[in-house]
Length: 393
Image 1 (spheres, rainbow, N blue to C red):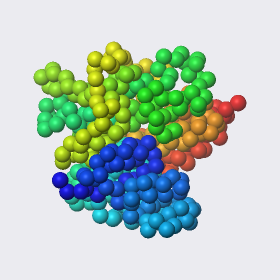
Image 2: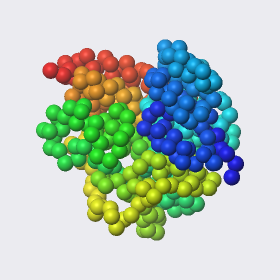
Image 3: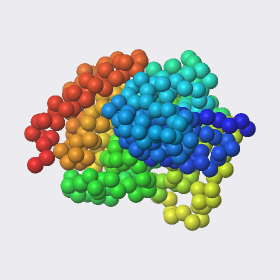
Image 4: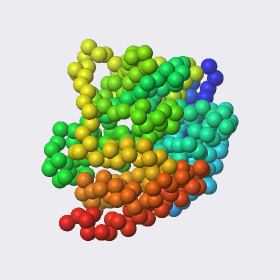
């Protein structure tokens, strides 16, 4: 098969590292030509040199000179700021991996939707904030959108060639996070260090906190609604601590198919990158059910983990509410990590921002309107943060 070129958005994050590993294991099939990072110029330079990229772009314009110096003598061109990121996305590529964390990845993901391209999507916020616009643009230009999140990737593989009309429901699984067995009193006193101890994955700070609150699973429900064109009541969550089963599809005839794999993001990355011919994985990435712990499943507790309930409500309301929810959550998680907000107050702040937002707001029709909702919601969240009820004492 011909060598396929990859543009990697979010090259220095946990998903980016997984993609780089898969590409390194398959040099005869894949090469990374372009890398994009956020603020860490040194880390991006190391990634660019490691993969032999021809261009590196840093989202933070202030880090442009540091990136240039770090790449001096390598022959790798570089740029910084919004225009450089968009230039990176516009460069020729067979596959664009969208793994920039948060709403910051929305504009680049939308720009990546070009005729004939394959987009491996790990930036769930693109669909949470502007799902209808992204999916419509992908269909219009003929871009192929592949889910790189492990749960959605499992559902995608299980679905296969089955028509969506044959699906009764889809279920996403959640580890339950580090607080799965904790009482409400213990959760109320949880520190950032405790919340960052995910039981199965090593991920970035924001997504790890979202996993602890179960907000991440709520965002994934919203993402699945657009990826698979399902109604809210066709989507469900089960807590599955072992994270061997990543997703389940229940068909109209009563049969249930499960997508199973070891909890390793490189499995989903390999599927997306090898979509036209599966890649070979090393032995340690294969699942041996005889050696796996007993598999257990339970319903999520929306009393101890109210963030998931807020996301489900936003999913059902639709319109602008998912974008509002996401923006408020990003502000709240950042404040928690800075120890300006207690763990239970993450959900409380999100709820307050959603309640203060106009009901029935129209769904964002493009990136600009989605970003406008995002910025307005962030301002509301920042204003509410100053109130006494959200102040850490």
